Each structure stands twice: as C-alpha cells, then as structure tokens.
Length: 100
Image (cartoon, rainbow, N blue to C red; front, side, top):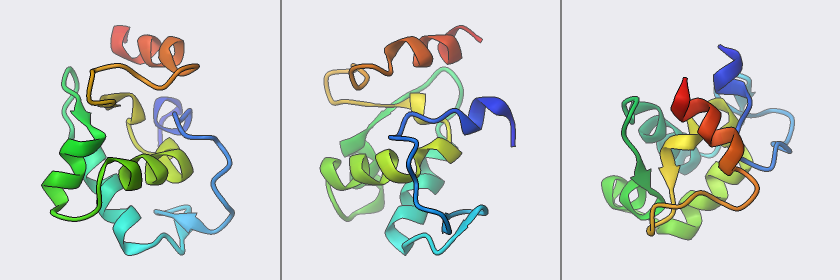
C-alpha cells in the first residue's frame, strides 16, 4: 500500500484489528463502503450520500462514520460532503492528493 493510501482522512484512530487487509474484523457495511471508495477513479469524487445510495443502505452519516474510522486505507480525499467540500482540517492534505 502506498503512502498516499495510508495517510487517511479519518480520525487516524482506527481500532487495532479493524479493516481490510490490516483490519480483519471490519464490519460488512464498512467493507462495502470502503470498496466503493476504492472504485472512485482519480479526478472524480462521490459524496457520502452518493456512496450510501450506491450501496442501497445507510445514509451519509453512516458512510461518514465508516470513513472516519477506517478511511485511511482508501483514497478518502475522493469522498466529499454534499456541497463538494471536505471536512475542516483535511483540506490541505486532500489538496496534496488532488495536485499529485
């Protein structure tokens, strides 16, 4: 896994033993959310609500919670709020990825 994929947008406090492949005890819903986030191509974004709609379950808050806990393993900077903005305090780190 590259450094870009491990410098996540979540809280950075994912519990030990939670998520793929480093986190084998990842809840099924969280795994599906992360799978969708990994499918977002470079140069594109999806909102938290888009991901929930794609999955047909949960909502933006549930997706946001998954991203906060486990999102460091996926390109988190491609998941944005409904208004297109990133979470406060993550904008600069996301910009580095967008410019890369």
